[in-house]
Image 1 (cartoon, rainbow, N blue to C red):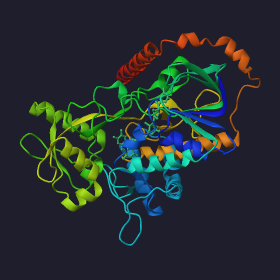
Image 2: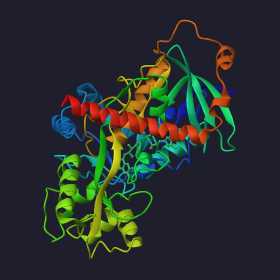
Image 3: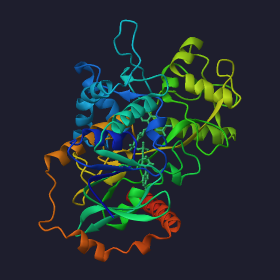
Image 4: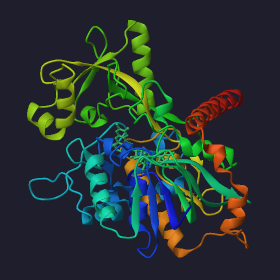
Length: 437
Ligand SMILES: Cc1cc2nc3c(=O)[nH]c(=O)nc-3n(C[C@H](O)[C@H](O)[C@H](O)COP(=O)(O)OP(=O)(O)OC[C@H]3O[C@@H](n4cnc5c(N)ncnc54)[C@H](O)[C@@H]3O)c2cc1C
């Protein structure tokens, strides 16, 4: 049994940033199911949005709302946009480098459904640049410990208050971690799907645990499909970033004719591609990166160019086959503006949380920003000690008396059942929404 002040489940950008923003007086344990580099945060290609100047506020707000079908929480959107410059400055202070113009100013790119250029990027490896720099900072903090290949199997709770987690360690032994605050930062749900851009180990474990403990969830049937991933039989679908279309790439049907506005919101574009595939009776449509000047392709998208080459496609000479795949999860564990869940002493941040900032559909490059902004707010809330908890906490011994580690011994079966429960719940939500409509 371990005791700590804060336990964070997940080492993506939200978990790492939250750890850095907590007080250095707090002892923090971060656990992560795989190796630290294996988080979706490392995969983000396109970039991170920032309010370029005040004149862009209305347009950025409207783009986010329109992409979200106006189901977004306006206050969450406002908080995210207004916090963006601070977060970006913070990232740069941590050593994150973004593309710059020849005069040294920050360079911005554009993606689908953005009416202006407002996305900061680092080649097509923005997530890796941000997350590796955050990780480097975390490693320098003596108050933060990271345990890799360690899986949260459950939270410890009583009377709707969370007291920590049960985890399975790399040697498959089980251990309880008691903490004043528990933060769920477990990312998306792509591992539940056959075709997804996510790491396969991201299976929505925090959602299953939330279901088990009656922690409120929200909009868990709001799942974003990315319109363009490279068609292949690989385990993880390789994403062809939206920025490529922002810079001029075109989509063609089987007769090499355009059939859609390439800068439509993701859900609209996905529907158009799936309809076209059905009409053409094909497994993919074609994407043409040749309208982008070769020099720009190499400079802005070296990772995409390289990956396509490895898969046998020279994007400077030929089109590539692309197909939609599961990509992002707008729903999640219901949280307030400080990332608090419906359970005392339990927070949720990043993709596993739902503060309704994205509404029904996320605007491109808003998720890294949202993850960081609301991770910071969780940290501030914890530091301010505003958490309301039940007046008398049970002692560790009292809780241990009720916790039976043997219930977790068959961890594989438990994880399987978690996945089934999450899938069933998503299905249930989808059905009930259809009935309402
Ligand atoms: C290919 C790709 C490209 C993207 N491009 C962009 C982009 O350009 N711009 C943008 O804004 N967003 C982008 N996104 C989305 C963005 O990367 C994610 O939404 C964001 O990084 C999520 O961060 P996170 O901290 O919530 O989760 P993640 O970074 O996914 O981290 C989740 C962590 O939880 C851990 N974990 C999960 N379950 C458990 C468990 N049971 N026990 C212990 N640990 C657990 C995992 O090991 C991992 O460390 C992209 C996503 C993908 C997949």
